[in-house]
Image (tube, rainbow, N blue to C red; front, side):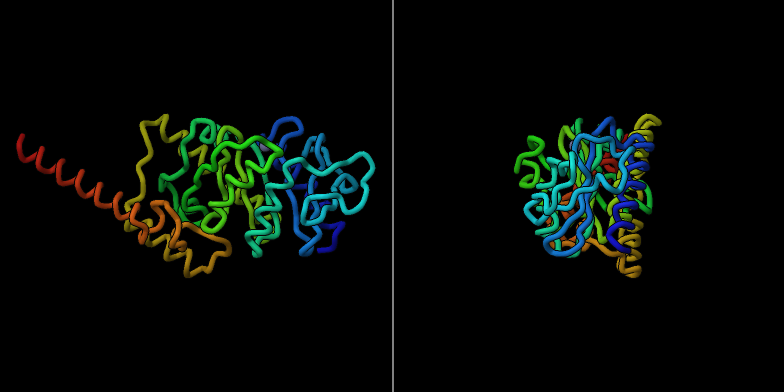
Length: 257
Ligand SMILES: [Zn+2]
């Protein structure tokens, strides 16, 4: 895909993000890596649903404009994108949006950890929350960095969501999947709570992901992940044994009746 085609694709993704109500007004931003020191990024102060290719800005690895672009300036959140490209050479695109359900979880301070459907388990595993940072400062990149090794998407506390991938479509689809996962988790709660997949089924889904060699990072494949996805982590072992203890207590109580 040449540079102009990528710019056109960025405008198409902008329309999708806007029409799917994943952003309001001029919110959100995304970028694509062209080479080690050249990146395309969405401009600030314009609705992502109404962009044309000429508005897309070209920046260097510090996020500075490589060439003047009329009235259009790069997003003030470009620092957060650059941190991801720096830490993850496999990533070629970053998407930031404020999807309604995912952002509601980010505002409530609830990470997405329930194993409720195969696609979310395979493609995301879990979505942790990066602690709140003041937009446009280094606080957000610093808060996101600890999750870059093991995840391809995070919630931003009291703010929104961030996803990344090997190309723009992949980064965008992770945002879509994340929002769908959050919406289902929320709606299942309204119906009395999600019935989670048993841990043996979750393990089979992780195995499927390995067999399919799905690109990107996943907490189940990551030794340092502090999540319940990683069956080797002490936290996961703790949560398994807690479940076992709960089961024993339940049986004992039943026998006492
Ligand atoms: Zn934002």
